[in-house]
Amino acid sequence: RNPVFFSCPMSNKWLVDVVGTDFLMHDQLGPAQRAGYRFVNAEITGIDREKKRVHVTDGFFGYDWLILAPGIHHAYEAWFGNDRAAINHTRTRFPSAYIPNAEHLSLKQKIRNFTGGDLVMTLPPPPHRCPPSPYERACLIAWHMKKNKIPGRITILDPKDGIRPIGEGFKRAFEELYRDQITYVPNARISEMDPFKQRVRTSAGEFKFDDAILMAPHQAGHLCRSAGLVKMTAEGKPVNGWADVDEVFLHARGDTSVFVIGDAVGPVSLLFGHYPKAGHVAIWHGRMAAHHISALAQGKEMQPMLPDNLCFMLVNGDPLEAIMVDFKYKFTQDLIEQKQIDVNERNPELFVRDMNWAKDSYRKLFGT
Image (cartoon, rainbow, N blue to C red):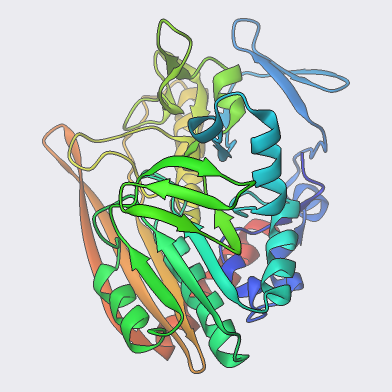
């Protein structure tokens, strides 16, 4: 759909000018030419799994195997039902910028124009895209406010009972670096949102705001629903909003011709639920789907693969210091087990590693 690739990973740094636009934007045509595949810039209008067709604005494409990577959509309906005026007002005035589109530009301009006051940031209930990134975003906006002596305060409304992952690292950053800029409120589950009067009612109290970054609940991108991959109730509502796939091989339940990768994937383990919805995991999912399709194309059995996940979060802009979380996966009997290691100490070397990871990922994906 998008003519160029804009990277959501690393975009929090871009919001406060730690990295430039050229670092995040990449050409889609060059990689296709080098790797020998066809890139089509078009809007997908529907998926017919019975006929194995992907419909676009000016026709359709048949497939033997289909890999869907639709990312997420913002489920504003959880707040507003079918009130399109409230949804459009929220999206326009208080964008969350968690899907690569004009919202990132709008949020960057909002940060530049912010002269002070109460800035509320609502966090989606888990699971949501890149779990530690809202806390990173809060830190970097707070750093921007502190550096430029902007008399404002960020209030983070978190539906969870505490910060996670990397809870201790972010807690230290809030207390040691941004005591005058950040107020963290746990157990703040939203019961009423009024974007017109600029107030939000939660289980932790009511909050008014001068400006806001309003992150609605996340669900799988609409293509998953179009393809019949999201379980629905008898009333036509999504059971959990995520793609129902085989936990190990990531293909649609009972259909080895369709794979789902990235953030749209539903729960994979009774032990921990969802894989973290992060770029690192998405890259691994792409490798896994390719591995499985290669086996199927050769008439072989698919062999299990597991991802890993490594997330670096920048919490200070001067000096550039980051914290980190590392996830490892293994099979325990018939279940996938997750081991989480938090690195809570702020360290400039972790920021260097983050930049190197991004550069290496872009190089492998785009040859840049």
